[in-house]
Image (tube, rainbow, N blue to C red):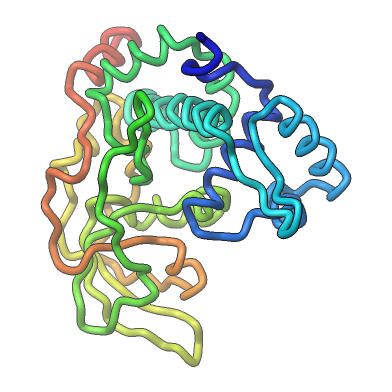
Length: 278
C-alpha cells in the first residue's frame, strides 16, 4: 500500500530525467527520446537505456505509436518530490546563504538528493512555505500544485506597456548565463518593467525597471538575503533582451498584486545572521 501513495526515492540520474520530463510537459513540448537527449545534453543511446529502466520501474510509459513519454502517477510524484527539494534548496541558498541564482541552481542539484523528507519539511517551514521557487515556478505539495496565473510570454508584450515579471521558466533556468544576466538586471518575479521598444528586425526588446529597488522582497537587509536578488543598484538602467530569451519569461500585464510573490520570513535571515556570528 505504501508504494501506491508514497513517492519512491530515485537515483540522482533518474530524478533528473523525471524532473526534465515534467518540465517539458509543463511547457507543452513533445517529449520523445530524441528531444529529451537534446534537453539533457546526452546521447540518444544513454536516454534509451534510462527510459527502458524507468519504464521497467513503472515511473513512465512509452506510447507504442508516437513514442511519446509520459510519467505514471508514481513517476509524477517522484518528480514533484525532487522539484520541491530543489526549489526549497534554491530559496535557502539565495535568500539565506546569499548565493546568486546560477550558482544556487547548481548547488541545489547536489543538495536535493541529500535532503530527507523531515529536513525538507523543516526548511519549508523556516522559509514560510513559499508557493513557488525563487524563479516563480509553483512548488507542489502533497500532490497539489498551487494555482498561479498563466501569464504571457515577455516577448509578446508590446512597446509602451508595463508588465510584472511572473516567472522564469524551467527552460530559462537551465541557461546559467541567462540566469546571471536576469539577476544582475533585477529581472525576477515581482519586478515591474516598462517596455520601451520591440525591434522585431533585430530580435530584441528594450525595457526598464519602474518599481524602484523592490525592498518589499527583502533585498539588501544585510542578513544574507541579497545574493539571490542582485542588481538593485542598476535596476533603473535600460535592459536589452533577445526575443528568444524573453519568450522564456512569463509576465502579467500591468502591476500585479505583490501578494503573489513570496517573501522569506525575517526569522530565516535572523537565524542565518546568528549562525554566522554577524
